[in-house]
Length: 368
Image (cartoon, rainbow, N blue to C red; front, side):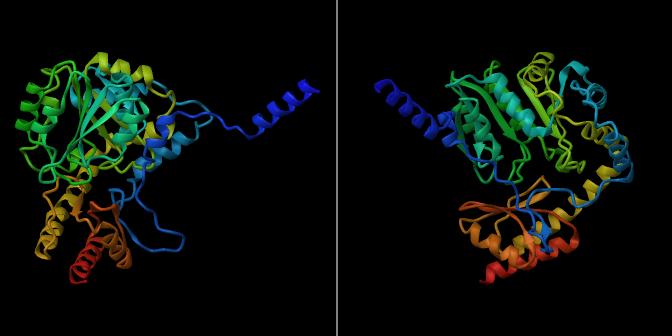
């Protein structure tokens, strides 16, 4: 009887128990993407910094042709694209690692550099995924406040300790749009110990038009702890296909390949990236058209009384503690924006019609 009763209790306990997940997950923020229009809504999608133009026909054709081979696995080493990127940047292919968007590359950089209890330093606010990547690796996030909406490199250098393994520099910074200068980064690299990985996340680099902004590729050979990360999601318009890459030393690139999720860069994504490089001149002309609209939009917002920081991305930043209310005003005027509750709203530079809605909403919010 006793044995039978214990067996019954054990079965009952098994029935109500749940798998034990990692405690750290309770503190990991879920990435919050920009909102999409609901079914039937016609809104300007300015929440996710996407390019407003459709794919060029050559890119679409390359994707269509590649999809017919989707019963086969993609090249896990992304060999052809790696070689093309190496040639583009004048480096050996052993120094290039390709991933499923720059997000994956940054997460892998945390994985190869950090053990539990070690530290990742980054400015805040910056790219929203950084804290989650850090926590999942078991590392500690050291958030250094921005100064005038820009990364405060002296304060970030001061935050580096013997526990620091990685520093993340987002330039242009997402969501504020401010960018680091060449002299800023040179001075920073001279201060930070050489055994600390310094990653410059340049997802928006192609939108930069200020000649003072850092050219990280000129610093790579002198600083083996430096990594440059770029993406095809923004300027090249491949947000839905996910291709990013890092350029560093052969040792760092090799470590990225060790932790890389095999086959995560799909056949279609590889074909799209290669085709985009073939028509790069035309894609960068589209980028130039967005950049041309950026400063006039910012100037109109400044004239309305908004404190919009200088931006080198394809977006503008409205710093305000009333971000939720401002986001609602934008939506009432037919615009979806990215709201950071209590901090501000990030608004993608769109086509002229989109930008006109932004101005109308901003004017209405000022007069409310």
